[in-house]
Every structure is written in structure tokens, then in C-alpha cells.
Length: 246
Image (cartoon, rainbow, N blue to C red; front, side):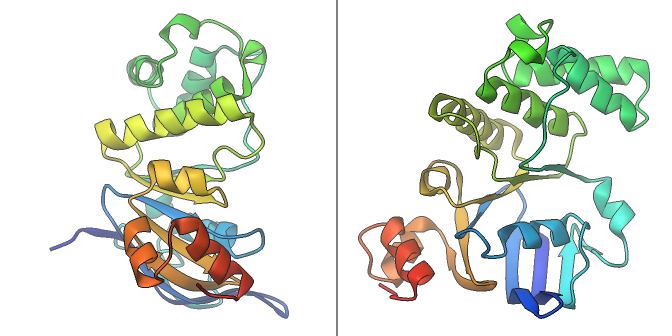
């Protein structure tokens, strides 16, 4: 039996007269990398914010790790980590200090902070730069520090909102490589939003395509190509996003 860690049923989110999410129903399994793909304004970030207990749904239900997002948000927050698109490092702190400081904010004792920070620095491949201030880092390396900062909480689910948006091509490649390694080694359930097909192809086990707040399709890239008789995932996405189908 599949271990479902995220489940939504008939999820609706409205902002006054705007319907941001419209009857979204999905399930995400433990250990998978699940991508939310869609054009800007499709509802990806809104869904992410409901699953991380930042927004309450207008209608329907959302459960994370067995808890309802509206009834047990504190329990959920203790078991997840969110890396928002707009997150920044503390540039005058070192990579080590960025991660250790974040761990300290959550009340860990000094010994545990040192243990976890050392492990994360090794995990993200920054042993040789741990003592450098992040102001000197490339955009990709800064993003690695931010991923490490989220991982120091030892989350059961890691949420990433547009993880490579705003960083250069080389930086994006570095971050994708890190996330791929984390998926394979750590088996952390990862949910990411993106409008980047390369990200989906390289990282995700399954993808849900959101169009105007509706879940237009869900499955592995191969399953979606077969379902829509398309040559590739780009044709599926473009056809759904433009309303032309495929």
C-alpha cells in the first residue's frame, strides 16, 4: 500500500472574485519528487502555501503527513521545511553560520546544532567553503546554502518554490544536481513549483500541470506523453496551457 504524505480533495482557494485554485485533488507519495508545473498565475505558489499552512483553503481539504492544514498547522510545520523563491542568505555570515544560525532559531542545543550543520555542509558539498562569507558566493552556491538551511531541520517533506528562478544557467545546474543527489541519497519527499521543463525532466518522478487554477493533468512525464499522444512533455504542457490541447 502506498504511503501517502500529501492529499488534497476538492481544494479551492479564492481571493475575492479571483479563483486561484479550482477543485484540485491529488496525492503525493513518501519519497517522491513531485513537480507542480504551470505558467505564471496558474496557482502553483498558492497550492504550495496551502500545503505549508501559510494560506487556508476556501473550500475542500488538504492533509500533510496525516494532519489537516487548517486544524493542525503547528504539527505540520514541525515536520516540513519551505524554501521560498525570494529567500536570501545572510551575506555577511559564512555558509556554516547561515545554517547553524537557522538551526538555532528552532531551539536546538549547541551540540546538536554543530552535528547537524557539519552533516549538512558535507551533504551539500561546501566543506572547502564553509568558512567563507556568502557575499562572495555565486548565485548557485548561495542557493545551495539555502537548501542546506532548510535541510538542517531534518524535514520529512521539503517544499521548494521556483528553486532556480533568478539564478544563472550554471547556478541552476548546480542546484538541480544537488537536489537530484538529495533525492537519491536522503529519500526526502520533495515538492517543487516550476515553469521550467528542464527542471521537471531532470528532477521529478511525477508532475501535476496546473492551468488557471485547475489540475489539468498528473502523472510521470512518460505517462503524460502517452496520454496526450505527444512527442514530448513540452508539447503536453504547451497544448494544455494554451487551450489548444495536443
